View 1 (cartoon, rainbow, N blue to C red):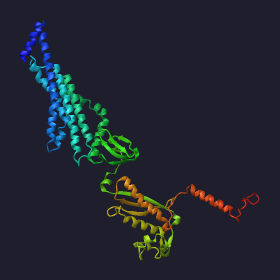
View 2 (view 1 turned 120 degrees about the vertical axis):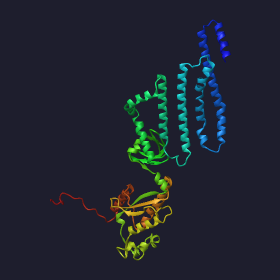
View 3 (view 1 turned 90 degrees about the vertical axis):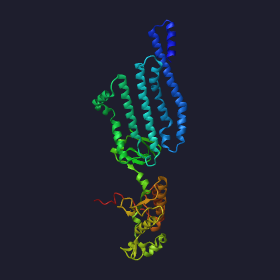
View 4 (view 1 turned 60 degrees about the vertical axis):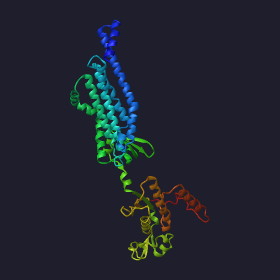
Length: 431
């Protein structure tokens, strides 16, 4: 190489250039050769070395090395080769033992950016590895990794500024400490959301895949992603909502995850019974009811039964219906009454009648199937109420008013029916 440089020096001097100019040309030529060599080595590593390493890793029995040493991380490592090659190749090709200052600064900045890219690649790989574990994949770690990335960016920025200013990073950190109030004001939302994310994760309040409800903000859907600044939720109407994590810490929200994990979901339904249809029935009238085959074997109807405590020979039809509903639901295969609360009760009377409320847990948590089972359980009860001489309350509709109108017209048109004469001043008694 020295012979090559001397040959170039001799050629430049023979062209009439000065010794200083010839020396400068030699240095720039050495830098160009070192730069081209670094590009060549980097290209060869990306083109041939990385595929060989990936092929070797794929044949190992462990999986973590496939994820940790993936092509993205290996390419980030290859990007660190050019500054190292320049550092060693420039003095080798040049007559000077030291590299120029601008190359030194450029290489150090390039190394800083390269290590930043390598760090972010490792963080992304760590998230991929974390997601492969079944016990950990539903933990919201993405926000923490974003904080790590943010710290990597901040440290890289401080290092680059210290290189450009030729100052120690410690001095810059001291200056940042003095302006901590301004920094905290600028990153206020980020800091608040980060602390909220830690609370959500530490207390296991929220995971990706959870079904949550926040009525105040119209949120009713599944959590898709939890990041540093936002929680992404897909509503059941397929709209996407993004809210800050601190909103879920400061305000109450309903998480249905534990309902799914328990394997049961509560059904709350109400039948409003027309109070005018509630009456006492004798045992003979009970036997004449269309619903008697359904209730004849109920323990409450046997002598001394619970339903006959008040009246030994009579029973209230609503009481009979209530006990039938309890028996019907308690023995249904979809009902879960062994270890769950179950009751059929009357609520205080309302203008809409007597509410008969049913609280029952079903062995179904999927929303579509759960609603289908609720309908299958309630529809027979509505249809069977008349068989107990009961009426389900319903507010009058236009059809009801039409029937009343037709009945009045029929009464008016009936022969022999005389309407009372309208009052006149003569037959009105003065008070």
